[in-house]
Amino acid sequence: DSSWKFWQLQLVSLRGFRHSTILDPHGKYHLKWRFDRGTITFEIEVETTGYVGFGLSPNGAMALSDIVIGGVTDGRPYLQDYFADAKRKVHRDVQQNYRLEYGRENNTHTVLAFSRDLLTCDTNDKDITESTVRVIWAYHSDDVGPSGPMYHGVNRGRKSMRLLDPGSKVNITSGTDFFNLQNINVPVPYKDTTYWCQIFQIQEVQQKHHIIRIEPLIQRGHENLVHHILLYQCDSNLNESELGASHECYHPNMPDSFLTCETIVFAWAIGGEGFTYPPHVGLSIGTAIDPVYVLMEVHYDNPALQQGVVDSSGLRLFYTPELRQYDAGVIETGVWVSLYHMLPPGMQEYVSEGHCTRECLQESLGQEMPNGVRVFAVLMHAHLAGRAIRTRHFREQEELQPLSHDEEFDFNFQEFQLLKEERLLLPGDHLITECKYTTKGRQNMTWGGLTTRDEMCLSYLLYYPRVNLARCESLPEITGQLKFIGVKEIQAPVTTWPFMIKSPKKYSNLSFIEAMDKYRWSKKRGKSFNEMVLQLPMNVRCSKWGQDEWSIQGTLVSPPEVKSEVKPPSVVCRSASEPHSGVVLLFTLCLTYSVVQACLSL
Image 1 (cartoon, rainbow, N blue to C red):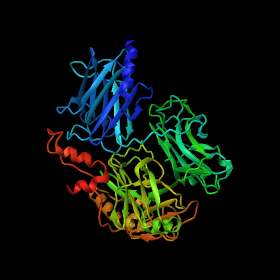
Image 2 (tube, one colour; image 1 turned 90 degrees about the horizontal axis):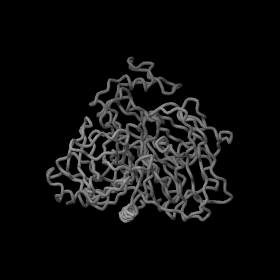
Image 3 (cartoon, helix red, strand yellow; image 1 turned 135 degrees about the horizontal axis):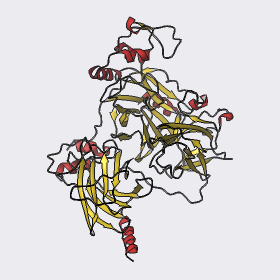
Image 4 (cartoon, rainbow, N blue to C red; image 1 turned 180 degrees about the vertical axis):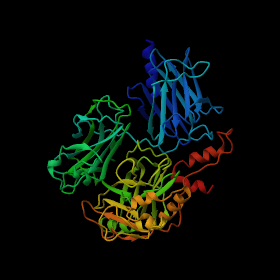
């Protein structure tokens, strides 16, 4: 019958679309896409016979979004390119850059396919790059009328994803053993945001095994409630009485044992489908140096303030006795989490740099793995003020291509990203995790710390073979930062934390936190402070597993002198009326950093 032919056509259209996801919690809005060097093609299938909307937003909201709206009327598909202004009013774009490929409709569903260039040189369109993209969606039961699309009401949403770097779906053998780390009936508090923590023991095995895949277990109906899950490795000497204890994270009354769980082992975020290790690498369990206890942190997002919600979500870890060639390790790099990492208020852009110094990598890799290690995935991590992150890589003062980068960082979308090509990290190399923040709208200093209102600047590197290096970080020394605001002397001996200021008089008996907040910050002073901090000597953190350290830890080193840098690709459009000009081709060739040098020489 006609409906069967419809779905046969649907199956045909699936061919060639390598990537897919479901955008809404009820399974009514399906998105598929494929891309090449210059264009991207989408297919959306929505449970409606009215119009469907799809857009790219700078922040997940309607304002200033790039939107396409279409549907099928009397058997004829239609599609229009729109944009929303700063007041969220929708306008038809003079430059129609979305191209209708096909459309069809039956009694329940609408299917539309459309394509566009990755870069259109239209100021009302959003560039599509390898960075995070905030997709927005909507639909309505009626088609677009003469006066334009009617308001969609509650049939709308957003989802962050990497359209050009979505990762690959890798199936594992059916019947592979697994164990679950799962909350049991956690009462979700009556508030907007909650972080819930519990310590678990890793599955006991009689011999070495490899974990080869980790995926989310989200309670049915809670797909929008469970926002992300982080897994941290804890101290192996933990008291077993702490097992099973669950509590709100970052809370004054949480168990002290939670503080021993710092190194991220895995991260999942809303919309993610889990992580499969490459076929030659696995996460080892069952040996004396492997994780014994882990802490699972679940972020519950409850903006509607639902009451009486109980959740039992978690993670499923697949493991096998068939060992891979290499054990995976995790290195935490970036800015050492501390109050000495500080961001002035009111800044449109503030840059922090965390160094994994050549001195640390020379000592640790030089002793453990002189031929170097291979990085295969990176998780970049910041908090709410974060806007962009790059993990930069230097060898002999010359910059190589970044390990990873995201110019559209979204706190609500943080996952390990597989590298397209594994990267060799050698003794004497140098890494810089560069984080760009905005503190516009904040009245006080933002401090390095654990809560989402505090900040971090970290890159977690998944690599092999595993070596005894847990953290390779830096922290700008505090004396220069205090000198900037006029501090002359601190109280000695130091008996309190944060320590107290002795002089000048205006800061006397204030903690250094209070003194920094008392200083009259301006945009000009904030910029000068930023430039000064980036040149300060750095405290080196170079720690082994547990409480052990490499000898370089605690020393002061200067930021490295850089002979050559890799600049992000850029483009100057000839005019808004020439969307298909040669400059577009040049940009699309330069979309990945791997060919930047060639592009810059053109």
